[in-house]
Length: 235
Length: 235
DNA sequence: CAGTGGTCTAGACCACTCT
DNA sequence: GAGTGGTCTAGACCACTGG
Image (cartoon, rainbow over all chains, first blue to last red; front, top):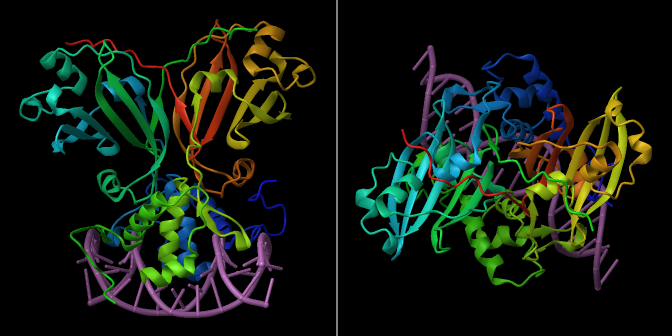
């Protein structure tokens, strides 16, 4: 009883094949035929040629952009066919350890007892993710002044404050880019992102780090450790 | 009415705080104050009260729906506050082992030598994900007839075909719901989903299984093994 | 029946970038 | 200056649901 599966006519007032989806299909064919970086027709021209309003065309283009097939530039740059093969692999442990190539590392104080370390993950001159860590300021006195912003965070904490990290159990979901994150990642607000979060404890179980990271789904893949693969216990 | 309450800078023609985002913030406050399943004001009323067009209001509502804070119903049902606490944890190894509660397990043959096992992951009467596995038919003769569709897939393969599975290295990204998957998950097409994929090999390294799973980001969290947390090697 | 959300239109102004 | 994408408006029609 899927409400959205249209099997011919319409469901819930939604036409079986919305016009924007017809446009998307045709535009996708066009994208597949064009080489990387080929300039794409302007939205107003497509609107004219397809006989649809610019709004409808934009909805189709929006999805192709979200799927990483088209790239939109500012001003006269216009839309273009996205370069293929720009997917970067990012390891989960590298993300947690903060070993990825970074830029724009910012340290700031939030409220009374929280220090935030935010960095933009870069791969091949493109921003692919944002990593944000929150630390208890009282646990790491003078952190903002002492941290050099280049050493991987966990290594620095280990070296400078003698933290021995315990286990971590990250979890993964999707999130929409806030305007702020969208600016850092050069995507539109509300772009769906891959979100990873974790809590860091020291070896005695005391909380040390509360962190999250978001990755551009069209530019990054998160690779993980293999789960335990012994055959599951049988009753 | 002054349209551009520009409260600061802009990037690429996008105001720092778009109007729809201001609406979203205010609407989110409202959502947080209301109990689960409370009917939400109609879009036209919000449009009137906020002094914004219905299109702008809808854009704000769209994001709240994608984030699982609001639920929209058909016809006179209208919009309502989504029940909270519906986030289910799904373990990565459970996903790979196919241990999650399933419904609609379908086995079909694709092409010459591929058998596909597709199942809908269910948690608390809601579909939260789809799992799809592709096997080489010649490696598992008679699979479609022998598989009982209730035993976890990997356990069945181990028991019935004496497969000893080797390591697995899953990767994670985002995807947009195809119309077909959207129907299975009861979401709109193009809804962003969490996507997990992996290749299964036996202990000798021969490929056995090519699988992927998608999860509703507003209903499921993927939990993972902790990465290696020994301090990274220093040069 | 009235009212809801889903889609679509034909405009408009803005900030930006290339020529 | 011209043309691009990003946002926004004020309408419209549709299919659907409840009283």
